[in-house]
Image (cartoon, rainbow over all chains, first blue to last red; front, side):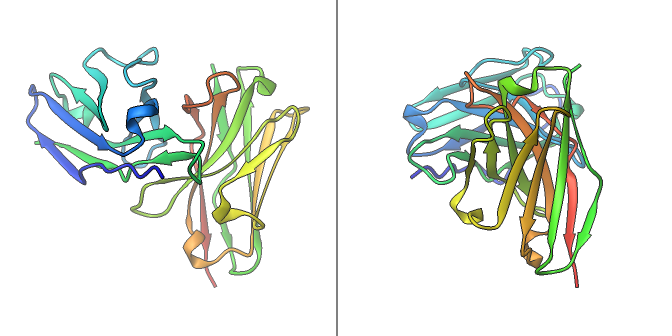
Length: 109
Length: 120
């Protein structure tokens, strides 16, 4: 059963590097996606297939996966990166099949 | 430009029903799943259901079985989600989103969301 665990909050000063993790027993066998949700807005896909970026997403955002942990890394953090970030997997053995992590509130200090 | 434009806010009473629409444009409607994802106030994202617009094939999270109806009209490129017998816990923003029939793992375009309030 796929449960994805994210830290509730992460804070980083501008210009520094931030990492947001997503842990889950099934992450080792499932592709991971990341979404950014700014206040009052709909989610936006920022990483898919663990590490691919949709067009328009800056290279400062990157994804990786190792063992049971996926990581979203944001380098040269900017004020505009402040948002909630959610990881997501598709797990055919789980109900619902599309599973989201609980979300991480990312604050730029 | 690919867009999913949803209907406006709704207020409904407990036990009634509510219907949200999602009009797609800028892409071939029949080549993508349409999904419904909701977000309660201050909470995370919860996947509810999906439909293949061409065939009408649907799949629901077990939690919503028997209470949710999802349809699609390929003549107007519009998908609909109806939630029956809502309770106060169904107060949330309901999003439609899409994933391709071939790469269904991720949601690349989202609607702006429709606020549904269940209130007596």
